[in-house]
Length: 471
Image 1: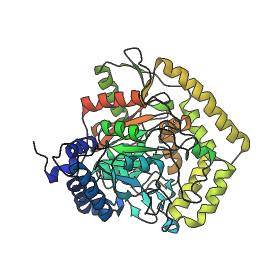
Image 2 (image 1 turned 180 degrees about the vertical axis):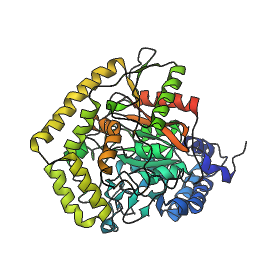
Image 3 (image 1 turned 180 degrees about the horizontal axis):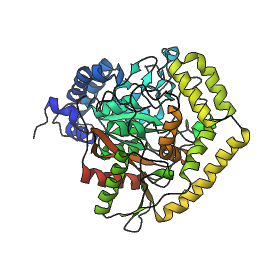
Image 4 (image 1 turned 135 degrees about the vertical axis):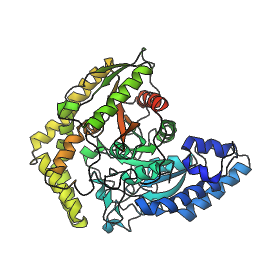
């Protein structure tokens, strides 16, 4: 069947690359189709905050000349992608959603952006985020709020909410976001898409913006960049393109993309209610659906929990509650609006008074739990669990009295994964009460391949939920 321009925005990144390679569509047609989709849909959701229309068209025309000349084409040749406005893209400011940073331009692309562009992908837009990347609702002081395309009354998640919505609505086949407190996986849950939070050091991350390059140690150990997409195959290709060491990121490592084969069948730990603190029925139902599907796919699934989930989550709070981090936020406070200040005030109230002993204990806990989870994953290499244990909260409620502490509790499993630097793939498994159900598949360090294999099995059995038109 011939691919028409009106269908192009519905295709995955891998499908678009194949379509371009087979000359069923040109790079310019692909880019134009997505730019039209942005023009049609973005006013309703406010996900893409900077549209790089002219630059993308010029890049597409150059890419088409390479096709015509019969050149060897890279893997993502002509495929559009968007970039969260906290990740450097040369020629555009890295604002982090703050008015004060509206004219702060990086000297060069972030390493992940460099590698996507080298693979032929074409930037078409910058996407919205939580101001300063510190809130679980996507609202920035510079760009305003992003809307959940499933239900306007619910959060789209954050901080990578703009990319999640852009992917979910077909404005882009591939987004690039970041995750320090669940910021890739929580928007994926809210918007019904897939994402990969890689192992710490798997995908290099660095900024050339003065001030942003100096990263506190707690953030160094927990925050990563990763791809967002509608199909698991796109995550796999994006990982292969972006992974590998880079001198700009001292944590980056040359780990192989596929580890040794495991004995079959692979055992999966199913975690329905992490640490027994309560999980919404909608979320529990999604986790059980995923468990049943993996059992059907040949995995051995058992309801068993890795060690000390709550302690792992609390360790990240301690690692973020250092005197260094607090001093940094105090310096940023004058640059931030009242919502961001309120979030940080409540976040640190939940974290408790800064205590050097407690801080050091957080880092010690991380080390001991890495060993404990490593031992657990000798017998249960994969863990399937909720991302947030509650459904997306209603817009405007996340800063109510006690709400930040409640969200921290809901995000305990996501935060535990950040503390330990483990890989996780978020994948949709269904819809209930009009909202998507998405689980995370967690693997051992540097075993993204195992996570992606299981997520692909879930996708094969349960299907995909997007793209959708905003409701």
